[in-house]
Amino acid sequence: ARVYIGSFWDQPLQHDVNRRLFEDEEQDLFKDLQSLPRNAALRKLNDLIKRARLAKVQAYIISALRKDMPNMFGKEAKKKDLIKKLDEIYKQIQREYQISPGDFPKVEKMQELLQHHDFTKFQQLRPRLIEVVDKMLAEDIAHLMQQIPRDDEARVSGAPLLKGGAFDGVKDTISPFGYKRGEGIDAGQGEPDWIVNKERHKYDATFSSLNPVDGKVTGANAKAEMVKSKLPNSVLGKIWKLSDVDKDGFLDADEFALAMHLISVKVSGYDIPSELPEHLIPPRKRGDGGALSPARSDTMGGEAES
Image (tube, rainbow, N blue to C red; front, side, top):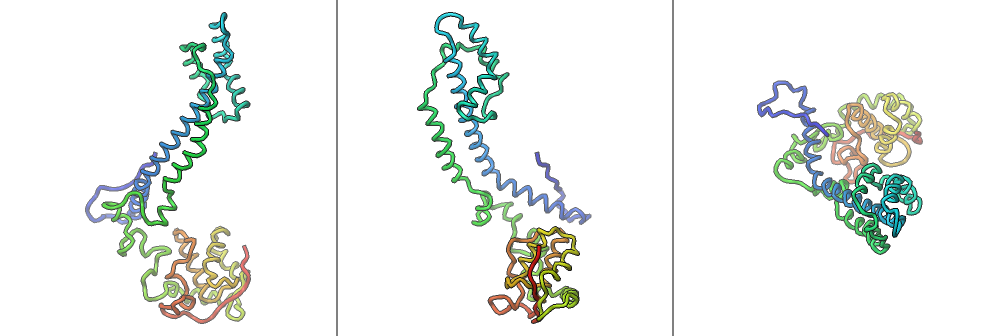
């Protein structure tokens, strides 16, 4: 079970140290609430699949017990013997029908239930009914699964399963007071100047120390500086791909500064996106000719290395 941390205090916070914790927990809570309809549907569908498989296995078990029962004498003794050897019957059915052991009911529970039944009244296996169950599991379940929206589809469509009311306030993406607005990768969104320029003097000094050729640094030289962040290679590789905007295998001054900015964002505890937001694209490399303030015209070069 998940425990959420929050506060019912409706006055201004006396201590701001826990603000981020409360905001993170609030986001997690509402995210889980939004997924309740989908999760409930998945639980029902999984329960249906489990019950269908169990019914199929029980049909095999009952059929096997009925087949081994004598027609005339010794029925009670044979019944006790079959119940005692139920685990062996399970293994035989597993081998014959290629059924997973997890689909079988517990042996002890089944043995207890079978004590109260007359095996001679059990029905023979009806293959047609087994085929119906198999068809349902193979086709009908797949059709039902397609009707349950996936989380990624909901994000792409922008239409959550639950919306309105308190959900609109928590998912504020318009005002500057929305969750993590203006922080991390979102910093600089809507500002007239390129956010990377705020620390550009440091990035340019580092860039110059890497001996750029024709205004570009090689991947090897850039790597030597980037690994100083102690971030995993997988993260640095992602940052490289985002920073190499023109995909030439080199980093120019703008791209190197962008890489340093993304490293700073990650080191500060924020996530790195899979695609570079428009406001972080160097102004000179934008299709609009650079709506923000111009950056330096220097460039860098070299092949990226892992």
